[in-house]
Image (cartoon, rainbow, N blue to C red; front, side, top):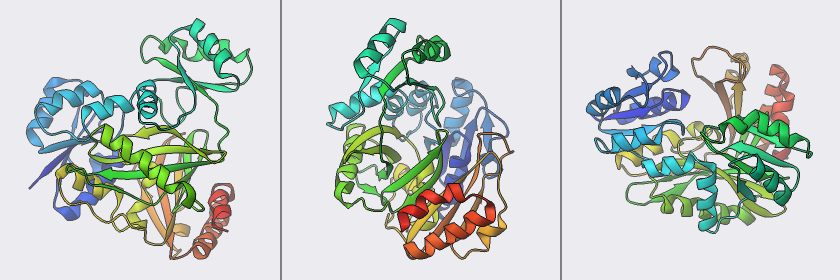
Length: 379
C-alpha cells in the first residue's frame, strides 16, 4: 500500500487524506504542532520542519511527499527530495515563497503583473513610492498570507508608519512595494499538471475577500468567456516553466479589461474547495493522482457551486444540511479569531436554484452580506 507524506497537517492535508481513502492510500503527516487538525485522520509526526532527524524518519516511512501550505521551508523540501520524490518540486516551492521571484517569473513569461519594486531599505521605499505613485502596498516578500504582512500606503505620511510596521523584516524576509490595483474582479485558475506533463484546469472561479481572507468563491465564474483562454494559458506557462507537478492556484485581477497576475499558491487552494462537490474530480484527489503518477480525473463542473468560508467560529450546520444544495465541512479546529474553521459549499444544477439557496441561507444565518456578491453575479 502506498503511503503519501504531507508536510503540514492543516485542513488542506485533512481534505487530501479524506479524498485519498477511495484510492487505498495511507498518509503520514509532519507538523510542528501536536493538535493539527489533519492528525484526526492520519498518523502524524510532530517536530520542526528543519530537523533532519525527523525528516529522515518521515522519508523512511513514505513513498512520495507533498505539502499542504507554501511556508514549508524550501530547504527542507530539497533535503527530502534526495531521499524520496517530492512534488511539487522544491524549486517551484521556493519561487512561490518569494513575491519578488514570483513576479519576476511572471514577467519573464509575458504575464502582466501590477508594477512593483524591491524595497531593501527606507530610502528604496521612498524612491519606490515616488515611482509607483499612491496608493500602493508594502508587503513582506515571504511568509505573508491571508492579508498578513501588508501595509497599505494611501498618503505620503503613511510611508513612515509602513516602515515602522514592516521595516524590521527587510533584512530577513525582504519587502516589496506593489502598485495598488483598482480591480473589478478577482479570478483564480485552479489547475493540475501530471508527472507526464498533462495539464488540466477547472472552471474559472471568482473570489471575494473580507479583511484579506477569502469569504466566498463562485464557479464557474460568470461572464468570463472573453478572457478565459488567456487565464488558462497564463497558468499553463507557469506550470511548464516550473516543471510543476500537482495542483496549484493562480490568482488574477481583472482590471479595465486586462488580466494581471497577483500570485500563485503551490498547493490545493481555498478557492478550489467547491470542486469536492462541484466537479467530477476534486482538486484534492487530482493532486494525489498527479504526485503519484496516476491518470488525472475529469475536471468538468457538475452544475454551479458557491463556497462560503467560515472564519473564527462555525455557524449552525442545520440550515446548510437542510438545503438540498448544501454540503458542510467542519475542520475540527478550536474557534479562534481569524482562523479558517470550516466551509460550506452549495451546489445546484442552475444559477437560479443556487441563487435562491444562497439567499435563504444568508437570511437564516444572518450572513446576507457574505452571500450578496455571488448572488449578484448569478442574476
